Image (cartoon, rainbow, N blue to C red; front, side):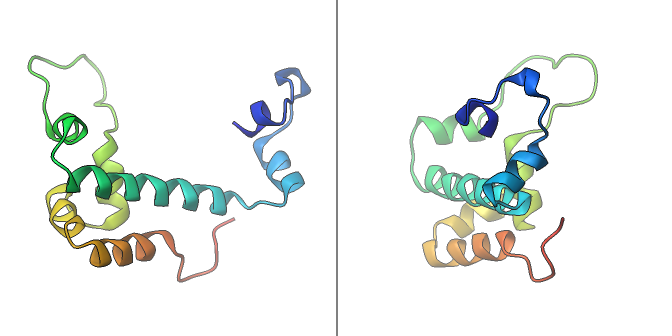
Length: 114
């Protein structure tokens, strides 16, 4: 994504790590921001009764394709928060409680990973 924004051609063979160092960013900062945005959006969607919530909670009829099951969006939510999706949905109704859970999930109590 950053290569595209900075207009670095793919033939330059620059690594993501190299580009992040050049910009003065840590990889963990970027991942932390993405986690926060994803968790906040989950809370927003679950609090409202609309099409996005229906798509999030709905299931598709029929058989799935062969091979390993695909990673679901809700699996990230439950892994990061440490709750099931249903428990996270209930928690999101309390905005302050959900904000503190998101902050806890995205802050590192130990040294930032490399």
